[in-house]
Length: 559
Image (cartoon, rainbow, N blue to C red; front, side, top):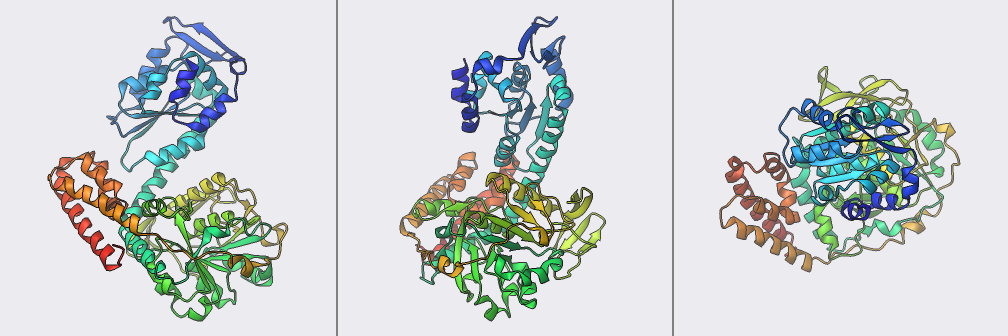
């Protein structure tokens, strides 16, 4: 029974952890008894995990009381605790939704898998199971789409015993869904620009303009300290100390802070750019200054940045970029990173991959200080108590936990960045990351210290020699572009039938170029469960996308 359950578990990390436990270990402190309803009741340390009178009836009543809306196949039910499987079985049979089982007690989970056959549930593809909250949240983030319903259900007795774990689960699930919604909004806003940037950058790089591969520098900076300068208002507190201790760091700066550093006579080693637009606006007038700086940009960054006169220019590649993934199939030198969605998270990942022993942040506040948003002194433009204007759009103002334990105002998208930082810190197992902010948002995994208390400053030596070890990038695009045309032709074949179907949408998704162009429309269709009222609009937009993508490829001589 156990081996059969194990066979169908779609979580290799969990399988590995389970294999390190023996049945003798997991059976300790476990016992059974019969309830008045003639059902088995599982207990650990003599504490019942299900209802002591009628566990099956209690589970049915709890589901009916908790889940008030109709659940579809794309929706998600998270069960807290596994018990003897009564809750899992009831949810599985009553609803067509995906089910995520979170059982924080690994030994209890091992015992249940040895005694209860849930292989049918596991083999269905609807069930994900884990004892780690991080794994559950990562899975949730990978499948959740805006408007999907997510419900958390639980064994009542177990919820009493593990009330704190249930509270944390509820909070983290909410934060993950909220962050994903913000991420989807970002994708909808930028996806077409990312497509243009990517194709223009591929074409420019292949002209032989000396763009270097950043991944060639992995682990080259071991023993050195990286200082990542963000644009928050607390940067002003550190400027003079940064100048005094300039030789102690390799400095990474984001676009927004470059002019502030210029005005204060600080030249960073690296400019990190992930901006999709307006790089010209940021860099105009700083041409001589930029010639002393090395630039790191993502393939999706504003294509105008490749024409700037930097000291050296490195390119990096995002793991979440579908165009990069397809390009990587024909260019094995491409190494992708989870960059986190902002220039500052990108700088953190790069510093970690390059091997820096310590990483220090200045100006990373992700919050407002007396209505000041940036180190430049720019104030927030409030349009109401709960909203602020950012360019032509309004952003919600939300409260997050500050480093001092109180609540502090920030932008809703900044709250999402906090989550990105926490995931990166945990995934990369980073422990020596320091934040100099004296008031900002709390980021779990960072150490908050004053400038004078950062331990073990080490001089930044040998940087020019190290940077010279990177190779120039040149893409093999012939096979890649032919495959892209093949995938686009598949879409054209389905369009010729003039039928709106999941098969048509799937064929678009399989084409990285069309998918990048149509991401917002695809999300709209999926959220509406392929509602036929969207058929005509989607078909016409797909035809227009094909025309536009082919024009880009021809104009840039990629085909």
